[in-house]
Amino acid sequence: MMIINKLNTIVRNRLTWFEITGVVMRIFSFSMVSWMGPKSPFMFVWIFNTTDALLLTWCALIKKDKAYILLNAFWILVGLVGILRAGGCIK
Image (cartoon, helix red, strand yellow):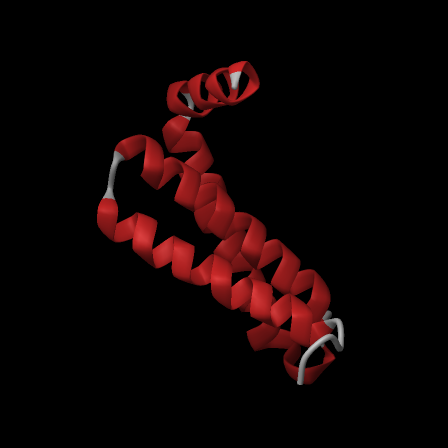
């Protein structure tokens, strides 16, 4: 629990930086798919996109922003499905 409290403090103190990083990550991953199409590295894109969703959800939780908690939690679920599909675990 102490580790989570320390990490929350770090994120809280640099909240804008973490949010901008998450947004840039999302823009990058969607741009990669748009530019590369079927040649894009889908597993990388899904992992990267899910990571940014985790980061943005964490920021939203700290800010207690219910709308963005819901939106980014949804993207986490979409990302997990994408990872499982890209990995051939589900069709």
